[in-house]
Length: 387
Ligand SMILES: Nc1nc2c(c(=O)[nH]1)N[C@H]1C(S)=C(S)[C@@H](COP(=O)(O)OP(=O)(O)OC[C@H]3O[C@@H](n4cnc5c(N)ncnc54)[C@H](O)[C@@H]3O)O[C@H]1N2
Ligand code: MOO
Image (cartoon, rainbow, N blue to C red; front, top):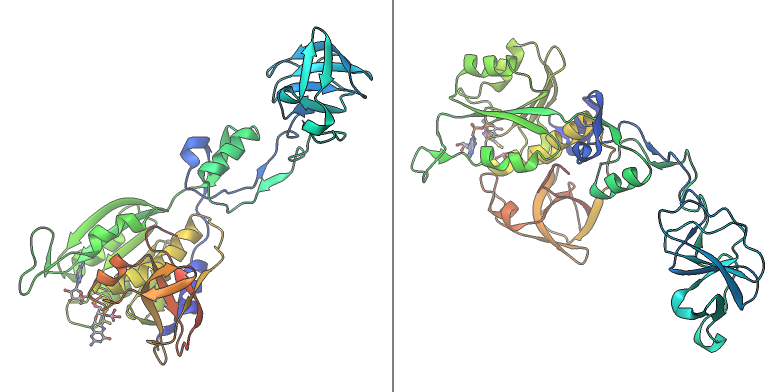
């Protein structure tokens, strides 16, 4: 009995705990998941700061210019009194007692006297205008982003701005790929009895949340497959082909001889129903991708990506949806349909036979079409990365 598609995906997500956490300097953390939230080390800004090049002033003008402070200068050791102004650069600390900042283009300085432009040329100033108050963006100790967040370029900038030199992140899962099949060619055109390996070349681009250690090509041989599954340093072994029940399909026999616990053995999904997920004694995971290349892609988004997300400590992502019209649903199984998206509408790309990646190559996502779908919002999965 094949497992429902949503349960299979959840089973993969639940099959593993996040890998150990490690502290990395900021650039090396890009693409990993935070093992702990990023907290602010200080108030931001750390003091009242000018948001404009101009003059900090107190009370009604005209004002007497009492001094000047540039970005990088310490907080001026003065308290502005009514009728006084202090020249300030954008980002420079404003003196205590400043009411607001007059931008340089809205005032004129004549010696030490500063006058504001006529009211007709500006909005009336309000208290605090153009002053970024201490702690206005965030107070010291605030959690800026939670554990599980993907470290993006913006997050790196945020962390640096908040005073961090390193981040605590989960290490990336290590993956080994095992491509099986006596009939596979790795160069040149296919010919009767032989096909080009289409899965091996597809996988590296689908493993952006993992480190691909190696890709091994095996003939259809039980002991070679068993040995390959039992060796190496990978956290996840991804096999291609051999998931079915033919005499040369050795995956299930190999797993059984290794005393693996099979968590998913077949999914109610088109294509890809023979896909498989198992855990070896010792905790390493095996994801079995069916040999038909589009079926293999279906297994990647159903089992491999959720498993890699769990191992990498990535938070579950909110589903992305699009409107898919009626038509083409299976009676009992979920279908994964290559689609292009336009303005919230998913349009099937066609060419979606299990042995063909043509539709997937034309598409920008796979629509998850539940059994009996009659038109409406469906989840869409992007498959150009481990997302
Ligand atoms: N009696 C049954 N036969 C099959 C069933 C079934 O339920 N009962 N399911 C079919 C489905 S659905 C699929 S999918 C395949 C899965 O087969 P395997 O995972 O065992 O893969 P193979 O038999 O090795 O190959 C199937 C097909 O794909 C081609 N292939 C294999 N590897 C690659 C590769 N790396 N690149 C491109 N093409 C590849 C291979 O030549 C075969 O044509 O089982 C069905 N049979
Ligand atoms: O599930 Mo198979 O993938 O249809 O050819």
